[in-house]
Length: 85
Image 1 (tube, one colour):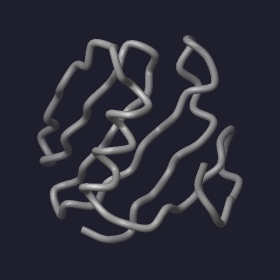
Image 2 (cartoon, one colour):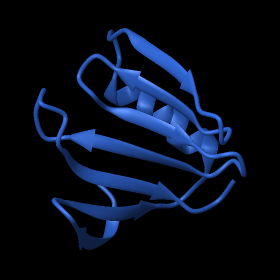
Image 3 (cartoon, helix red, strand yellow):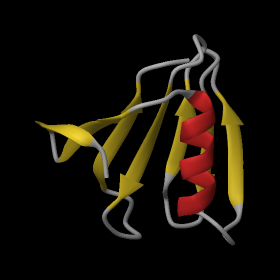
Image 4 (cartoon, one colour):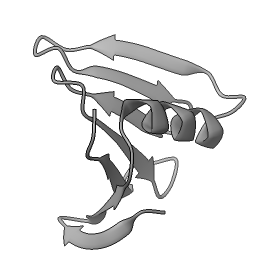
């Protein structure tokens, strides 16, 4: 989905313009109709995980990324980075 693909240990990383608002909108679009579980880590990372394994991760600084699985086994095939806050 994103641009500038870079391989990384069983997945590839890409970039999309925008920040948190764009990441949230894309996550909603990708996971429409699915249940979403919310977690907050000790480091302040918020993680929203849909039934199919798609995740929206927001770090403490407000940067976001979406991890898209290649199967229900939840092995990620693409991590989309949003560079702005």
